Image (cartoon, rainbow, N blue to C red; front, side):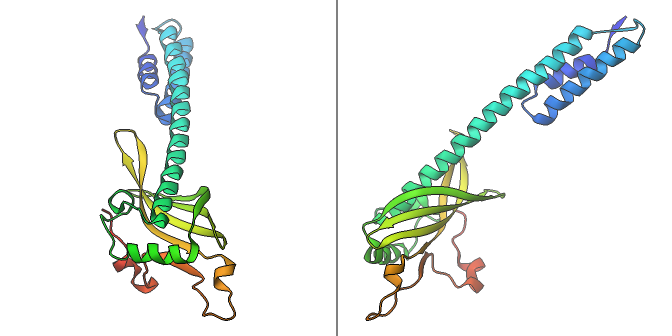
Amino acid sequence: MRTDPLAWIAVGLGAVACCPVAALGGVLTGALSLLRIRRSAGLLSGARVAWLGIALSLVVGGVSLLVAERLQTAQAVGSVSDIRSAVEQTLGGGVDASAWWVRDAHAGLPDFQRETSALLAPVKVGATTQTETLIGNPPVGRFRLVLQTRSGDAIASVEALLITDWSTWLPSPRLRSIEIAMPRSTTETSSEPAEPATVRFPRVDPREAGATLPRDG
């Protein structure tokens, strides 16, 4: 009597069941092994080994899914927190471009900071949500922020590269663009020229965006 090879394969898949495919494969292989053993009329053994493979697949796979879910939650929370800090620093005039922007520096950033300060300051960043993640290398995150300003609430739309910090396995965002829809009170005046409905950095002509947007840095 020999041990069914599929039983050992189930154990192997169960041991590496951090991948959902491996976990499912371990369960199915273990079940198939039990069926083969039952139908072998005593020629095959290894039922305990097959059950071990099934158990390993379920336990290791379940733990891996739980860890992955918590890591994904931590990544999302970390990204939102970092984006808030980046936008607060940018609008407050104290941004570290090498830490938060795709390139080490942007010549037009001080002008953008002065413009937004004149229109909105003081600014407090309120609710921040990640609205979309675009798959890529690195992935791109899009965020929506509510800015509490002296003229009312403004809405900021931010796009950032999500670069993985391999020391923590958490994303480290690098801002690529920020666009602010100004409060109505700053755009509707009767005696003065209307302020722009939106301000954006970097300022690009949409037809030239591919050539002028900041590159990955």
